[in-house]
Length: 169
Image (cartoon, rainbow, N blue to C red; front, side):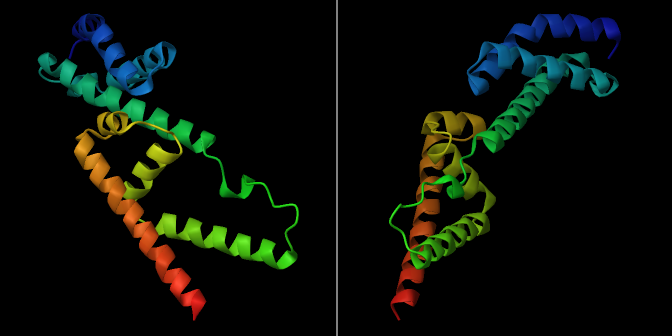
């Protein structure tokens, strides 16, 4: 793709890309930044965009990936650690140790879950995204998101029940 073709295509589809980014990020400024970052990335590979008519398709995929990366970065900085939970003022050293062990066990259960389950649970419970928003981000249907989250929760409940049975013995 020639420089002139790239510039014309970028100008022609810029607003389309901004709208697409805004649907993921819900912020005008972040959407503009995402599109700018996407255009820089496309510029670096402009020779591979052939034919030039594919610019919109390449840009659509690239802006989605940039937005997903931004969302992941935001999620990492905004996650509240289980360790930040207030400690009960009347807790004994033994109950504090039990709480810590439970917290570590639960973190392990979550980390051993399939990636998709973990991510959907975090999006829904930590990020407080709607099923519809998650479906848009993941490129799937709302029904599929609901089903996957239900399966993830069921998996967690089964692990908790197993642990409680073992502790009762």
